[in-house]
Length: 198
Image (cartoon, rainbow, N blue to C red; front, side, top):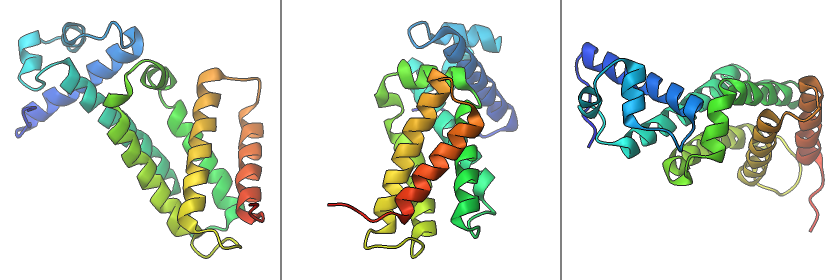
């Protein structure tokens, strides 16, 4: 069980270790990630690191929790005061917020998505998706025509936007950012306004 920091000095040390861990993971990748490298980067002894993190697995779990929580914070902070906006304004703002959050540390995103085993991220990524899904469901309730529920539409939109945003950030296809925002906005708008097919 990880030692919970109670004093300011201890909290500062945990933040120092986490920041070093993010840098090492981003720079060296999952295969070369080791607590000794993190300790070196943080300029502390391995023993000091182990006072706060039992082992590499525990540190990686905290790193993934921090990564996905901060990604979610960036998205929701960008949209916090916009949920009364009409869809034609909110949708492109939401696309922009999601792209910006994914681009914030694209190298770390690449390692997290392509290298780190899913077991470290699953719970935290699910919590992020749920957070954004719940916001979308609340916004969509009563706003789009048809019999489809806001929760279902929100799930489809969040899943599609996440997948397309991650692919664009990691693959960097020859599609300008502005054009991608236009296309994703059209995709979501048409879906929201379209008639469901059976």
